[in-house]
Length: 429
Image (tube, rainbow, N blue to C red; front, side, top):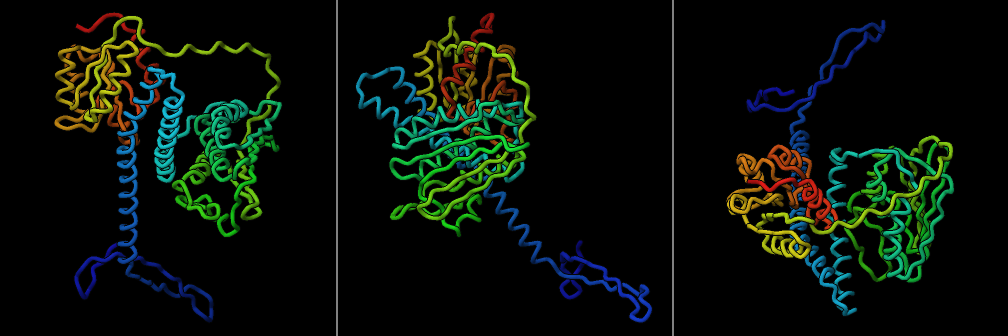
């Protein structure tokens, strides 16, 4: 509440507490004493903290967008080099190196945003019945090449009986992938890392253990805090942003689980345990033959016109080159107004539209396209570095059909384009 200061006349924030005073002889209630405190300084400090937190979240969102924009053309260039398929092993090695580092940087950006969403309570899980073994096998398949390059030995002991969880498989894989990444990073040459999983009553326990640099006792209590990094090997500076373990713990807790870390000290290795609630065991199901693998997306069977609108010229032109090599007829434009003019002229079936552009942004460009009779049936896809919840809401309200975040995997983009091409019955008039 607020009261007016009798000396200055200014409104001040106050807290008021009533204290019951009893008769010291009879013990009966006697009167109330009211204590009023000026808490203006505390309120101002709280407001400053809230504003600082708001600015931090806005900075993270802008940083992610600015990093994703240059990542998109680099990813496109890597895919172009793959299509060309140079036989030179040195060029292949350089291409693969760029590909790995782009993926790593993309993961860092995504992890940073995920931690921010968890702290704000805005990250939503997509829960479904999940076989733990399938998630772990997928994670191990991704991790093994990385461990082989580092010269480490990775072993896994998985339960024979199926263990089912009510979980988000993508987020669950994210937890285990981060733990394996850390074990690989903080193990010396020829390190040994072991992943084990077992049922423990109503829970499942997944452990990642290594014989690496270990963790000092003073670092353990703060290990899961954001931007906190344990000591690096002797003579080395800490690497990374210090967000991986905070993200792992946040995602684990969203699943109703807990996470623990153990280490005997520096040089003694470490072990991370993830405890999650398991679904009741089910009777063994009959073996069903696995479906054949889905074919890789290819170019369209019939000509499909695509318009790419992006003020990042490298991003637009590299994507146009890539899609053109696959078989799409691609036109580019570099701002919202030019994109609208190109759409009126070319009448594309698909428009890949950036959001932050000069003259007219992507939201306005999409609305203008939807106002045209020939633009109502177009497949308009937001392809942008903006990926916050508010961005997604505005994208839906503007009339977009889909939202893809840069840098998008080529297989994902081709799948979206192929879906549109396969369902095309006639060209727009």
